[in-house]
Length: 242
Image (cartoon, rainbow, N blue to C red):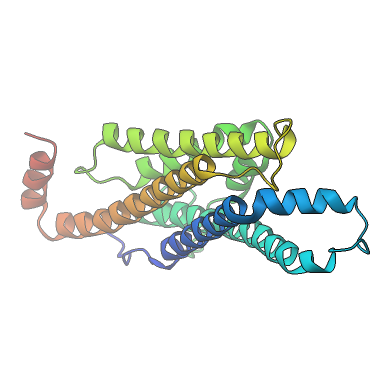
């Protein structure tokens, strides 16, 4: 059996860090919106779009803070998405190397990378990106799983993550594309949107941690199998409840 070291935890850690920063940025924007947003929106509307109107200079500071917070939310969201794509691509490559999947090692003997195109297409093709990402993650789980990892609990976690992500996306699109009439605030982001984004981030982090953990356990299980096939078979049956 070809020796494969445990997976690097750096891509998973990068996802966790990016998600934390995203939640912090959304929290800061929500707090600003709740504390200052409505009043700032009324003051901006009273200027009539004239930056030289009386009182315009007094709004430079709050408007700058708001703009910085919006940029931070956008930047951290993009960073979280990029980190997740990098982790997914590397985890897929690692799973192919560990399992010796066809095409994971060409005749030259040097490891080749699974194509990244399906990952990018799954995330960025309109319509397809509503269903493809959890399918890709589930395929990675199936390629990485150990006998001790149960599919029912995994599917529950995966479904909860993706439904919470779709809910967060729907809420944010509703705010920016169809603002409620008569709402005098800046973005409309409130506690409900913050809660959904936070739950989605927590569940996304949980899926990343779980796959990273089972990939590590899978390597250890294979090493034990090679060293003691009989004992490992008995342990595998115990994992499955026999």
